[in-house]
Image (cartoon, rainbow, N blue to C red):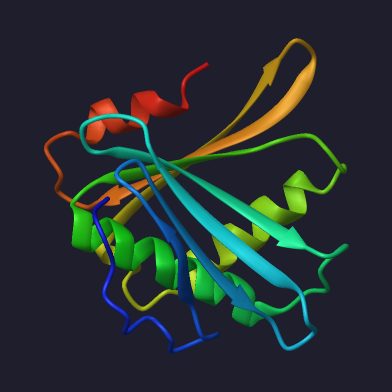
Length: 151
């Protein structure tokens, strides 16, 4: 699996928990004790789907969490020259809050001009989904990458 260097610890300390040909799993723990797992799953030649999971229970707001997630995404995309897409599902009625937190963190990123971030809301079978994609600015595959968030 394409890797990542270990210098992304500027926020929370991040470590690799699994690394295979098709998947990379990273983990970090917040000050409140919530563990976060960020998983990149290969979905194409240069595309990956990213999953963010927290356990145990409901995490409290912590700006360092989203800063850490944004750092992980930026580093992964830069080092692997790829696109990363995500889906925020309608599970707990908080998808809009997660989307806003994600956008806010991205807008505050010092590297935001190096990346393109697109997000849209879609409905499928009456369920609301927020879909997003990140890729390097200037990537010639940008239109293809934005097609990843079409339903």
